[in-house]
Length: 161
Image (cartoon, rainbow, N blue to C red; front, side, top):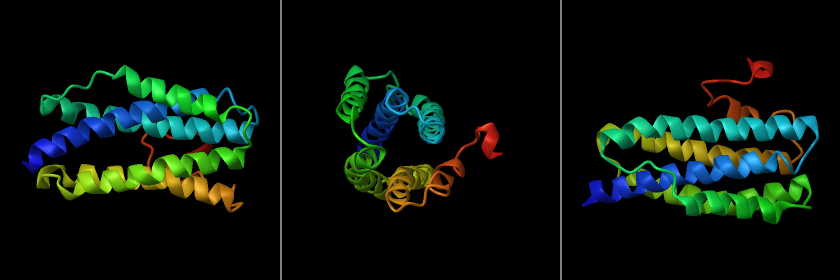
């Protein structure tokens, strides 16, 4: 049944936010430049807010929203693999990691019950925005790359309000 697959997908989306939150938290140790720190903070904020946005729906559906240790570990491993890499190399790693997730999120949205369709579609936008951010960074559009992320935040960084 599609609703059961959607529920499994929702758990996967939630755990993906945990992975992303851990990854961006650990990336704060990799780059000391203020611009990089700000952008990483904004990415981490997006993951945190999205995780919190999913939680009430998961609870309503009776889904397990405890953090699964393996997703936290994957985030740590990804950050470890980024050590010593340049900002642009890290952006390429992010693109390679997130593009398949965009496709996974689209598949989940395609089976979402109508009452959860808006949420599921917002998750596709959320994930695609991370790819867009990294692609803009690679293209040298450093002054506007983070805007695709900031526009999604409920709790915007003070310097962006």
